[in-house]
Length: 208
Image (cartoon, rainbow, N blue to C red; front, side):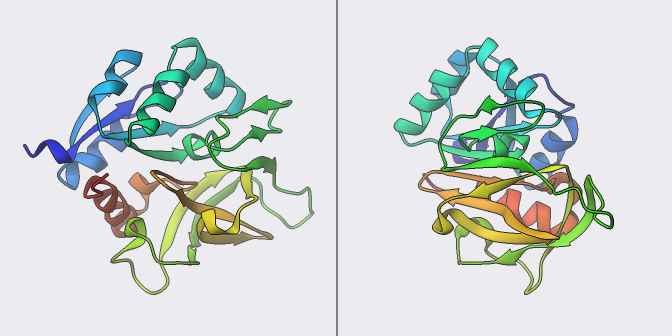
């Protein structure tokens, strides 16, 4: 196996990673799952998937001692891919069930969809990725790509240049982000069929 296709799938213990692992393997990645801080020093590609509540996710990440090693990995040039709550964790804070600090790797915060009579929350189902700029992560997608979402909170990115794609669900929010050697998606790529698999393949082929 080409070592450049090896990825570390961080197991923070907040969800079943099997479907994410299978999706990466379907596009030719060699996946290693671990919750060990020491493992972060051995990979140039790191995936941070997450489901559930933001606060629980960040508590587990820190309790496992993963935060500082993750920062060190980014400093040495590893690329990081956050999925769902893993993408939200890249931002500074979340208001979900109280106030919680994120990793602060991107400027912005995570807020709840507004309480409006006709607005369905959680936002569940297929929705469009409105591409804002070209990036390796989005190469080879159809003109109007759709992905599968399931979330009640969304990312308010402060830096427009961090937003690779936006999605509209009463409000317009960042659904794909990237800055330097980190990126993230709010949707579930493992449930997004060809579009999701292509994005995973693009990450696997990213050369840091």
